[in-house]
Length: 424
Picture 1 (cartoon, rainbow, N blue to C red):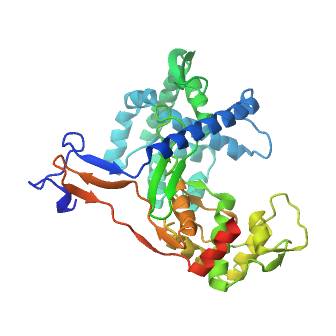
Picture 2 (tube, one colour):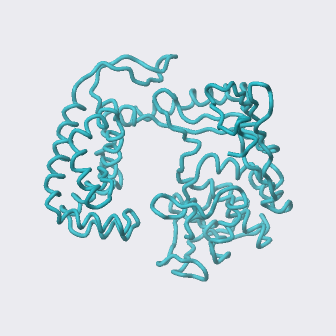
Picture 3 (cartoon, rainbow, N blue to C red):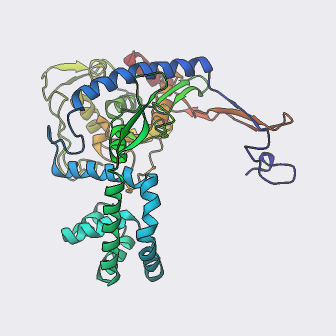
């Protein structure tokens, strides 16, 4: 909205009609190589996945330690995909518009399918709304509307219409239909088949996804960006999707310990269970926390920090976190490396929780954030904000936008040098 980014008459540019030229940092060679590598790898990985799961139903399979709650969550995720589909959205107004308008007038509340499901859950098991409230899934305002609405005579009609909608959807989604679906088996990445819309949703949901970002750490230019396995069938950018990062988070813990406590990579620690007691020093965990190593075994021997990071030993990461006595040093370093430690999820929880479990990777972050943070190590401890648009010119060649570098020192040079050596 800056004046220099508008037409001479002060109106906004139309990106489709005004002949703007957008210059990006993407390198065509890098992009082609990234896409080719993704296709080669994901095709092989998908084949292995199908070999295991073809004769099983991922939404009902109870192998391993899957609980009833996990199975219910899988079913809910499948139903969410159905609700987002065109067929569902086309049918919904016929059944729910009238009751939704009544709810809007009486309660000034926009009724969603999720709201109806929550109230039905309360009918099945009293206390469900209270639990959602305590877990941050529902707000106090929503809970108040739910309880009032369930006492309203209109609630009966809402249930009837919602159940009628589900019956209609079930019928529509089980009609076999000719369609095209994604496949790795030919260069066009699609094939003709006949299946029900429900089977189509389930089929496409079983494809593994990935996000790839190639970044020049010296200037923060993004050279390749692959958001998923196929844009036509999966229009979702996994580079910007939050996922639990696991042990890839551990270098930030080690970097914090080295930078703030001057711990040497040759410092030795016993590989043994480590407990962080409830509310120990500045930690906020309400129970004692004793994480296990990945294979649930301990050598009982001393190992250097370099060895521990190389082998991703949980007990040593926990030891370092306990020595800090607080999560804030690690969260602060992450913030300096481009990962917003104040950011929250939709349920109100921090993306980087204020819990010691972050030392093992209990954080939901994006490929963009992780790539930018790791690039800091490769750029002598200097963080640069990744960018993909270099400049924008109008049809006359006048520059109306130019990307300016945003960078700062995130990690002292000596500590960064040590981390680079440890990561080799």
